[in-house]
Length: 137
Image 1: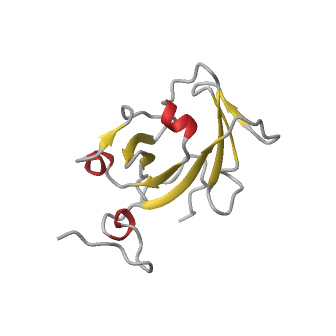
Image 2: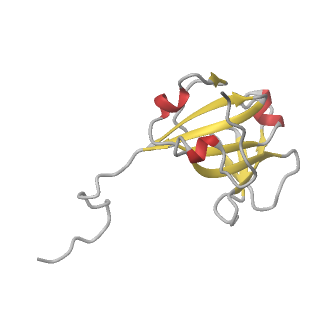
């Protein structure tokens, strides 16, 4: 029996799988004054650091290797604890990649819409972050 989501319920990915909202990526062809260019990805981005809602605008260079679906359709992104487990039974749009140190990303397709899954390396809480002063005994 299939459970239909009620208006007051969170989506299955959040309520049952523990995925956490990360951002909403919106493709644009219009340059924005605050865009930052990411040369290794050939993408211009803005808004991620400042949007209270996690909205990230993305403008792609013509030779960017991102799929046409991601270039043309907004995507929602979720943080997951185990990327491989989150991918089981999903339609993979692109291979798992690592756009920056400590981050692994995969794009999937759900009913024609792109969905980004992100896994962040967790630091051992008992180890100090580099550059953090150590407490005095």
